Length: 416
Ligand SMILES: Cc1ncc(COP(=O)(O)O)c(C=O)c1O
Image 1 (spheres, protein in one colour):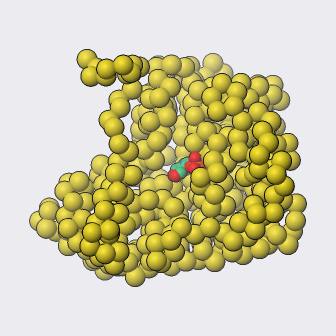
Image 2 (image 1 turned 135 degrees about the vertical axis):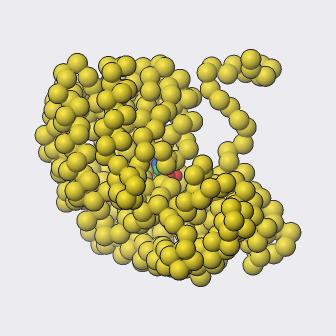
């Protein structure tokens, strides 16, 4: 029975505060009480400099400052500013544009793209599939609109991508329901930092084709590319995209694009959903249903962020400035990742296979207790089931090393 007084539970599990923001608050409280230098706060997935200040690309700030009043104050069209819808394709695909019918709808961040995908391509009560390591809002968003999030095992015993588990779970769910939304976060997966190899992508594409052999089944493969601009080489990280060309008509690929990380405008709530289909009718329908969803939820997106992206992609000099600035920070992030992985290896702790991105996950039992043990040393991380997520995006390379070493000690203390 629900304990709610006036609110309706509507089949959601509502547990109060967001876990990550809760631990972040503990870190902030300790820093206020004992001094900033006593705390390493590796909780929040924003890119911070070595002193803990939010990094905002100065090239983006300049563009935003130069916007005309109508560009920051006016409504955007429901589907998004037309030039933005065009430039998002370049921003997302780079030189690796897949072949097929492509349509774009602006959304408030990648979150909006996830929400619209689940809402339009699954039914109430349906299962939505993702990996067992996943970004927790996938579950919140699913439950908010009365779907159930279910998982497959992301890694096999050799630490490789477990395509067999994905296959098995897809078959199981497709036996029970006519369609399936798969949420797939790559490259630089949150929370593990994993990126599929070219070979992994080949296997995934082959799997999608095999599942589509039954024409009565509809498969929606949502690729969450929120971290693509911090996944190492920005061209190489997009090389998988053309592999998704020419899939059967009952497979719809949707890319979830976000300006939050790549353009450091988290709070401006700007992103897009990009569909790829071999059917024009499916792509046209995508546009229609997602516009309807936009109108029925947040109405329109944030015009200034959209116009800023257009200005960047209309001006090669500006684009080069943004790319160069971002590349510098991406190298800084890679350095932190390398520092953490090397200290973890030396300390004898195991991480999920890490390639790039904002997070590394350390495997451990009793993660909650280990997390609490670390807090005694002023180290704040996020326990997530079978492991602990470390946001290297938020701490220096030096602190990354320290966290790995302290984590080895905390794991030993808690688990023996
Ligand atoms: C895996 C993943 N997907 C999507 C997002 C979407 O973020 P936003 O809605 O700010 O674009 C995030 C943000 O943290 C994320 O970690």
